[in-house]
Image (cartoon, rainbow, N blue to C red; front, side, top):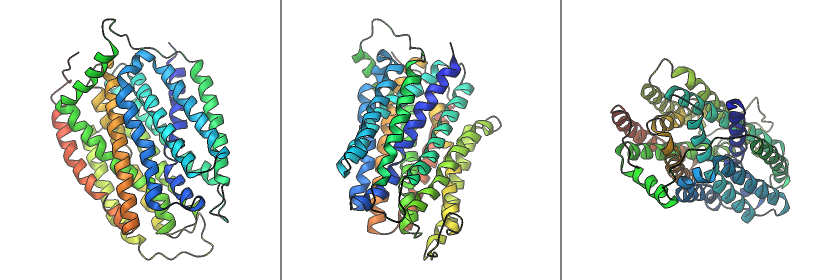
Length: 412
């Protein structure tokens, strides 16, 4: 079996979705200007993305091994390709909602398939954690690329211009390339019990929810995504309205956040060889808190020159996105800890639950930050991120204690 080709197919699929999923912050900034949408209304785009992820994952995750991971990914990429084509042809806020609804629904199929496929081509917990961190790191390279790709199509002289919509032709082309690679790559299927029905598979997924380790992990994943999406989604708007930077520059500097996430996840695979996962995630969370408390005071009463550009922006615009370096390893590490504690046949079901609660966390984080941003200010909105961060420290303590008890006993 050609594992290298399978990995390439998984990486490209994740890369395409990385650009689209994490464009929501950029698109929020653009629809506020291009379609005269309020911040409260624009914040709903996160929900149009995340709620379909949660619903589709919950309903279909346990069924995907029967459909086949390769077929599920091809269906997801095709849906997104059509939605990208619609964006420049039908420019409106409702089309943007439709795009993120489609991206969210498709990503539910793709993420479950990618995560479950990792279990099929790795032989140990160490290999699983390493490949998952690498794929998530590559995902963040896609996010990083997305900021610059979108910025290249934006017109800084005319914030209301619709020129940024032309980026979706490029993304549709990437989807076509992705489909060709997926179609030509044989991805293994999970051996299924012939006596089990799709209904039994669904019930089996729900049974995971009664396991203490799974419940604590779900809370941890939810809190992490509240934290990440609250900051990541609103960082372009924070740069624009708090640091007084132009639209294009606001998006470009947000790419530092994505670069930090990518670097952090790639480095985590090396650090984990010398440090326990629990020690690393605690160091990361404490580093995040310290950085927020040090940098956010620097963002008050900022004055920028009329000729501000990439190299003379306020210092806080470069420093605050570095929080991604500490944030990066947490999600893939705890996901790998959970998946590697389960039999491979349960990975699709568990990934479905991961995706469901991650999506709910993303929507919650984005909407809370958006509402706080609109009612108070950007600094207050970001200071509130310390609340889920503190709760996450507590939930990870419980996760560590349960995980030390050994593999999860499951029923079939």
